[in-house]
Amino acid sequence: MARRPLPRILSSGSASITRSREFARTAADNATDVLQPLITITRGLRLLAGAGRQKWAATPKDKRGPALFLVAACLLAFALMPYGGLIALVTVMAAAAWTGRERTPVKTGPDEAETARLRSLYEALVPYFSVADDPAPLFSHGGDWEKVFSGYEFDGDGRPTRLQVAYPAYFTDGEAASRARIERLLHAKSGRGREYHFAWDEEGNHLVMTVLGALPTSIGAQRFVTAPGETVLGFTDGDAVQRTVPVHDGDTTRDVPPVVWRTGARSTEPHLLVIGQPGSGTTTLTRSIALQALQHGDILIVDGSGTGEYACLTGRDGVLAVECGLTGALATLEWAAHETERRLIGANRARQAGHPVPDDIRRPLWILLDRPGVLAHLAAADGRQDPQELLQVPLRHGRAAGVTVVLTDQFDSLDALGETVRTHCRARVVLGHCSREQVESVLGTEPHTTPAPDVPPGRGYARLGTGPVLRLQVPATPDPYDEATGEAQRQAVLGLLPERHTAVEAAVPAGAGVPDPAPPRTAAVAVEGLAVTD
Image (tube, rainbow, N blue to C red; front, side, top):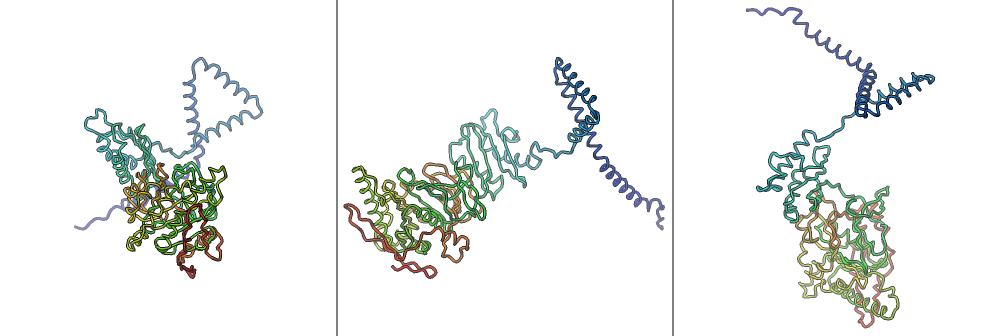
């Protein structure tokens, strides 16, 4: 059977209805735009009237009479003023327009996605913060998370950037293993790829988790504003130290918090141990320390790796020797041991005689030993003395003699370090991507932060004595003779180097009652045409 066509009104009516709706919607939008000031003023008058009623209801009855009298006096004053009625009308309209304006709604709590994430964190913490015998547990499956999360902040992606957790008093927060489990859990549930700081308030039973920002990596070698005996190891978080120093960062100057290591007779951490991974920036830190030490003292450099990383310092004023070979290194360290004894004897005699300590004894002497593990292996293969044994006198008596020792090595040689080095090198630095266990093996305690996901060169942790573990970013101090070094950084390092003298002279002061050893030789180094005779 053939289909009958639809009536004309049914086939063409839908298009006209759609056009009518669009016309009505456009007219409504235009009317709203035109009447928007009137709508705003009306809304403001309604809000003002409501506020006035609330104010009148809150006013005590004995004060309502004086309030009415004051209002009536104001109205009478406006009535008697020229154009008073107009002024009052304009004032009321302006107040109504300001009160009825559209405001951005203020967020008073977490949204649905943030609530779900907080609920997930709460449920994940239940097995760690609850016991079966607790009559009123803070953490229970299906419990109220608002009781334990007293503070929280989120970023634009909905991940928490700050979280304050209240936990029960019976939780073993004094045990490092218990704290580590909670920190690993929060790290995994809050989002990987960021670095978190955990602050445990054991007295108040609170844990504050905070997302840390990246440390600046664009600060290069320069003259830092420090006193004699102070060395800037790098830079850390603003709330970790109570001091800032001005630095040049590109074309700007800003204040950054430094990690300052203090040496000298009153220092409790007179020697430094630096451990890192290959390519982590340990040589960069040693080079930065050398440039700062040359401002007020002399340095001896023993490069166990023999790669010529310190060739830029060869023959400079204040650089007594730069050694790369085993023979030269042993001779240099033997001289350093005798020099430490000579300084001790000279200072003792000066004090007994009531004279000031001579200037050659007061001038600081720095011994920078890079990769002693390599030299120890070569010495053992050749049947010679371990270079670390020659450091016992400078390490034990260096603080009184003005001698500072800086040792730099890698994790694979950590077990080869002697007991004297571990005992007297109380200032420690760990560089590179490493686990919490590796950091604890060097610093003596775990950091309160999670490992950084991306570790730039010079990034690590520092601990001075028994102080807290600080995040550290070493200032960029590359080898200026390296072809891969940028021109700006090359000129920055070269500008800090002392003048080069024509011949390498190692002046060994004659000690009282101490036989003069042979002066240290300068190892053969060749970097981009620079050659120093052996």
